[in-house]
Image (cartoon, rainbow, N blue to C red; front, side, top):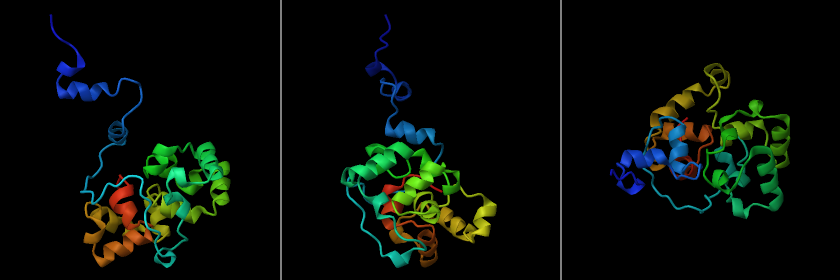
Length: 190
């Protein structure tokens, strides 16, 4: 009789089986997002809050709450983000995993826009720090004078922050990337 247990299956078959509990692993979630450009990661220290950048580095106020660990958020903030955006510890701490982060502020519901206002954010903050203009089309990018910055960032995505040229750093900062988001916290290209 042929042994069909999982431990005797080829590696390819094991990968397709997943965890067996109906939930996707983190790797399976990323694979479902489609092809991404991989780049070396400088440091994968989970559960460390990023340093707070100087506000005048960016075009809009830095939303410190978004870069605070889930467990360190107030109960009220966690409830606002859970109820309005479906955030939980996993998709909050791993930047870019929540589907809402792939939407522009104008694509959010009225309730979601009200929720971000409760946090002291506005649409400019959401589109820059949360979405990084990923959901803008070419016309919107052109109208916002961001198209050139997006092109520079796309071409530089495989580099670490420390290896970016001055022009690349300027474009990345204009799109509200920080060293932490670029090198550690954000796992997809724009």
